[in-house]
Length: 342
Image (cartoon, rainbow, N blue to C red; front, side, top):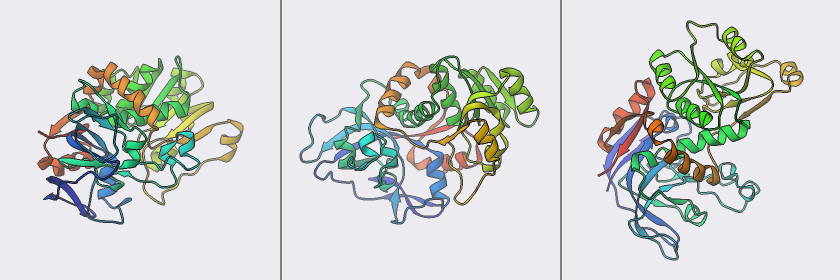
């Protein structure tokens, strides 16, 4: 089969590799769509590069079931599915709480197991056992590839406790910032989104943002205080830039929640006044993935909000064009790229 194989830092090649054979408890998926995530690009750049190389990345996967390993029940050949990518052990302290992203044995698609930038992917038995292969019925495959990133945004919203009537401020209007906007609007929130890029801010308006502010032209703190009186109920930093995170900490109100969503480079730090955190009773938190329950919620949300979520996808391309897709993510010249397989 054809796959985009990572051999080292910034070294990804289209190669012919053996088609995997599903072992006991595994399921072989014929990949139909796989999303390119900023995390994949960070890994390629050396941030969290797997120890065991070569490997295949790609954790936003949708396709059809090609074959079932020994002992697998409840699934059928040719069934249209999306795949929850975390192969949690199911037995540790966090797994027993359903918080699979914090499993003591981190493993999953593109993270120890070969992922979806290939014509076929063998889904680990742990995912199958958790019932992480989810039927999508007639949902288009490109939209099904949006389930995983949408689930991460649902996880952030739940971590922040956002509810109808809240004001949510989102830092960054890239693909995930737009998905945060859609998720927050679905929860009945007012959304303020800030960015340096006018084109992306215009897209944020199109997907439902109530207010957009340009960080180069607008006095963000002054504008947000004027709009809210006391600051946002929740702030979600959908960028992984520590200076930006630190600069906009004051946008959250006393008693509010500041969520660091965008992954930052290893070793980078932020500075804050602990008195502000203490006397303001601020909750400073973060999310980076989703639970299986949140993944299932995302299936429903993507179906319900398909028209607006489709606007987040700007490029659909073949596997041979994955290098260009990676470059677009690096340079921020496109929104979401989806690799489409015949």
